[in-house]
Amino acid sequence: MKKTLLSIALLGAAFSASSQTTIFGDDFNSYTVGNLSADLTGTTPGQGGWYTYAGASGDNAATKIVTVGANDNALQISGLAGPTATGTSRYVYQSLSNPTTGWASRSVGQDVVQLDFNFHTGSATTSLNAFNAGVYDDLGNRLIGINFNEKTKTIIGLAYYEFPPVAPATTSTFSLAAWQLDWDQTLNGGNGGATPLVLAADELVHISVLYSTLTGKIRFVVFHGANMSTVDYAGSTSTALVGKNPDELTFYVSAGTGNTVSGTVSIDDVVVRAQSCFNPEIAEFSFEDDNVCIGSANVTPIQADPAVTGVYTSTAGLVIDAASGVINLGTSTVGSYNVKFTSTASATADVAASSGCSEVFRQSITLVNCAGIEEVTSANFTVYPNPANDVVTVSLADNTNGSIVLTSADGKVIETRNFTNSSVESFDVKSLTSGVYFFQVGNTTQKVIIK
Image 1: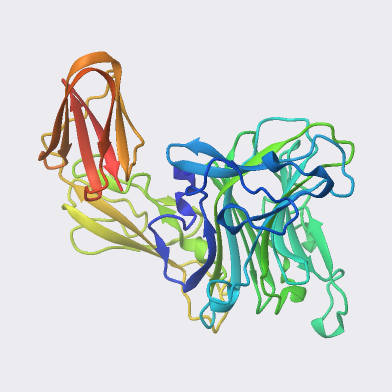
Image 2: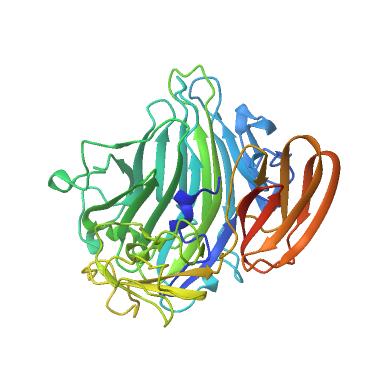
């Protein structure tokens, strides 16, 4: 599930200048493919410490680890092929209260909760199942999260807030309420919008939801395709969230009234953070390729929010346009660089005055000299995965005889391998330094990025 789309989501090598602590993270890659747990009562944890609960609709296979790409697993959750009734929702959950790694382990001033995860929307379906995700407190209240209708592909925000909004001093009870947010960022009089975000079938999406335990400010961010949709709750705050600490992370699928068809979604790269900035994503950006050849086409950064203005800077040797961030590969020199983007957009509503954080984001890029090595691609062979960090497989079009030459970007031969009547050859690249390399078979050369 890890695609270029998601590199803007604080899951890669880039890092924000704002202070943050990861209190939970899981990419499911170390798990055994198959059922997540053997216990559906929520008593005994399964793989990775995940608990599962299914009540009357118990089915171990409903929550399982699946392979979604080379060296990449995801957690798949299937709903019931029947209508909503007692015990028909299927849950997976993790504790966030571990005293050494959970919320209590955060640093002073890290009072913003952020949940990030990737999910696949599933195929077109008539299933009325609904996928839910959220962070809960120790009383079982969902503090922040989302609800996704698997048939309509509509996504809405969920938060814990007082309704109608009143001053905290006079609020005695709170309701967990959902509102359809206007993903066109027009809050329609301050009560959510009439145009909810509709995602595509079989779409890979990144979700980021945040709330401040100090101010109650709420934000929902959805990265999908080339777009980022951002919505703040009307009035900017929910005072019911003030002082509400995260205790549990939960994903579940509910059946749906009148439902007869099971729906399926999958999730990956789950991260819960405590941080001091409410809006670190405002300055996020990425490069489509963070290892590039000197002399090739100029590199343009991909901004999480293209509307945000700011200044790009780096160290001597990297020629970069301060306004656009375009890197001139004709005049820059070989080396590894950190590129910094400092937002000049007003963020006073998003950053607590006492937080001491700034809207700054950094991303690394390496420029290499590929002179004398020309990439000539054809159907003769393919290399995968690309990028790679463990093993690279060279797949030859036909069983044939010949040799494969692996070289670095400066032309140094790393390995030459002769093969006889072979269609697949694997190369261990764990010991190689990160950068650009080339595989050559006959007159055909293909580039591979080693992370």
